[in-house]
Amino acid sequence: MNASASAMTRDVEIQSKIRKVSTFGRYARVVCSVIYGFGVVACAGMLLMGIVGLFLPGLHGPMSDSGLSPQQKLWALSISGVVMGLGLAAVYQLYRLFGNLAAGAIYTAENVVRVRRVGFLWLLSAIFGVLIPVVWTGLIALGLVEASDPPKEIWFSWSDSLASFMSAGLILLVSWVMDVGLYEKDHAEALRRDADLVI
Image 1: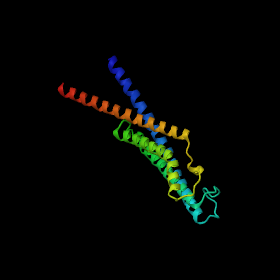
Image 2: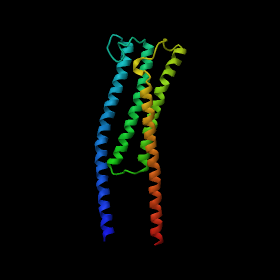
Image 3: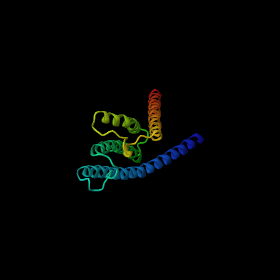
Image 4: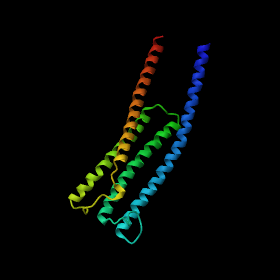
């Protein structure tokens, strides 16, 4: 009787925690949708104003007063667009992940994939940040831009780069731990089913 009561108490606690995770998932999904929508509008607006500024330099817009040549502005806008695109892709994966949590699907293979994709996108963004000075040097060597330091919009930072690599590593580690845990859970459930069949 005590064992049965303890099991029932444990089930109640688990269901309570699942409801809390689902509630958190709903709120987090709303936040991600707002961030994603704002990010898409901001990215589109920045790129549009930047392109308009290239052809109509009298208008004020992103990098209008930066002293960059039109070629430098074009490449700076392209690189900024890629970086923002990677960020938006990561937010979209989080949006889908929190949608699963809101629906009560917590410990699933799809969630492992979503977390892993966020980690890879973060890692790709970190690698891209390291490659920016190399790409800029290559553009100068090819004569596509005038010789100068990279514009501040794509300036390389050791501290930001290190933080990005560490964040990507932690996210990938979490996805790996989730994957192993999910495998162990499925394996334990399979053994339990086999034992029930034998009985």
